[in-house]
Each structure stands twice: as C-alpha cells, then as structure tokens.
Image (cartoon, rainbow, N blue to C red; front, side, top):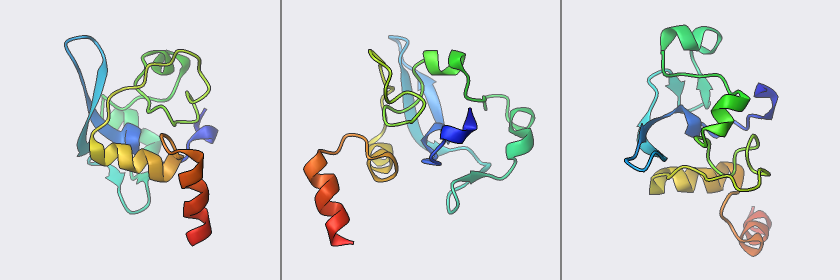
Length: 112
C-alpha cells in the first residue's frame, strides 16, 4: 500500500488515545524520521526498530489514525480523522492540501 504515500510525515508523529477513544497527534516526531527528506532512516526494518511503528493496512486505516488528507483515507465516507496539533494541521495543508478552500489553493499556485 505504500505507493499512495505522499510523504507528509504526519503519521510518523507520536499519537495518544484520548478518553473518548479518538486518536490525538502530538508535535513529537519519531526519532527515526528524517525531517529534511520526510523519509524513515530505518524504513526496511522500522517495525523491529520501533514497536509502535505500523505498516499501513486496512486495519490501521479502520482505526481512523491517519490525517483526513492522507490518500489512504481522503475518499472514505464517514471517516473520522484524528485531532492534529496546529503545527501538523499546517503541515497537512502544505503537503496534502487538506482543509484549504479551492480559491486559496489556486491563488497559492499562481504566486509561485
């Protein structure tokens, strides 16, 4: 399933489970995440290097732990996205285009 990944890196940030059972992201990235490249430096053996690291599977998708703009979940009806920190919300908009009105996306492209 990794062919859909856009390397937003958001799923590589620490998550906690809220009292209501929802997933909440923190601003703390995995120590194996290279923030400059958006790549895991131990990708081939990441699940052995860090037990909390999981491969993207249908089961993981069903846990509703991926951001709403993630290509693995963006077209899922009724998907309840996790809560992101303001910093990660900004990263999601910048890398996945999630949460931006179409006019803003268009005007942003014109400025480049």
